[in-house]
Length: 415
Image (tube, one colour):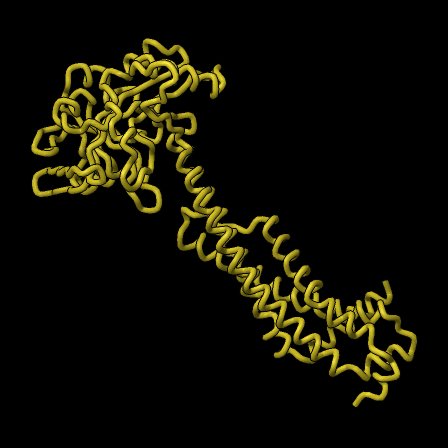
């Protein structure tokens, strides 16, 4: 321990003597560790953000649709030729599948589906809003559509095709900036609708469309007014006393019977869990982590080469010192430990600076984007320290070993 403490002290004195050289040497380490820590903190915050959104959406909510979610490009012909979801499928599923606790049919009309909507009240106009037709059970299946003022669509509204609407917070604020919207009549795509409720504020994912941009009407009215909106979907939740896998198997079997899918034919529908967003996000962040790893590896490699170079220079500059120490009884391992300590202290200092900068980045993200709770986890701090030490030991070993193997006689005669 005494020898180790002495080696540590000598290494520290050497680094303090060459401050500028030491600072330039660890720059690559700082860049590599900062990139890893910053991206890890942001991804941790984004993962929490996505998970919160999934929980709001309904973690036990499932959907049945004709086509897979997040489909881009031209779909295969076998998917394009699938028959559309029938407006009565939700009712049939409710009657034939005891595994289901609640089920609802819904349809959507929006710009991203090739339609446009206009919502007017006197001189106020909202364009590009999202119109969705739902049944009363929709509020149970998708709890993020929570009414703050007024009420939701009722069974009576749906059965009697009443022209009533529940507005998202942004739509309500735009149409009624200074008055209570409940009870007023708006023009939705040229038709009169009475406002019966306003949803609690719930912005979309990363600024995209959310509950705030919706106008919800009874499904029977939607189906009558917009027969061209054929891409309907079914939302459902399973009974609490059933295992998820067993319940979903029952739903799939019931849906196959309803849609008359025979024998071993593939399903002509998709069952989608509400956490498909988090699954998709994890795939994206996985690629981002790999990219960050490559960038940080380049930074650490550059920093490690810099450490090796500066340690080789240090060995050359201190050849006489090495000779004196060996003449006074220093062993090879003492010399090796001294120079390894010096290299490790260099990289550890760079790692500490990188972790501090990464923490600052996380703080700034959390401050200016409160919805993204970026934070440093102990795992990534430990990983940052570990990477720094590993680089110091790996790239410092060759110069340290070279110093340890120098002939003391040659070292004493070196000038």
